[in-house]
Image (cartoon, rainbow, N blue to C red; front, side):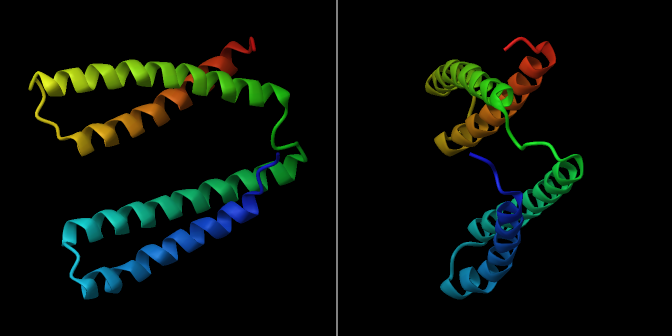
Length: 136
């Protein structure tokens, strides 16, 4: 299954527009400003990042004439997510253990955000490492 980067570009623009449109809606509904800030920042920067990434990827692949995915990159991605999920499982056990012992004063929502970022970073790291190793 190929990724259509043109659709991702449109998704990025829509996410940008929704984050801007959410401002008057959240203020009119009386939603607290911290939630509005989170919605706006995540939507705006997420949409911007998605648009920039998909545009660069689309034009880079279009100029080279390469396929978007082949069997090697699929295997690399599968292995990277597998390793990252195992590391994330250990990290979850570790973080919730620290939180239960009151060693770190994080709330559960903070721990969940830390886990989400950790999963993304470790999957990117393992994808880079396995690609560098080139032994799939």
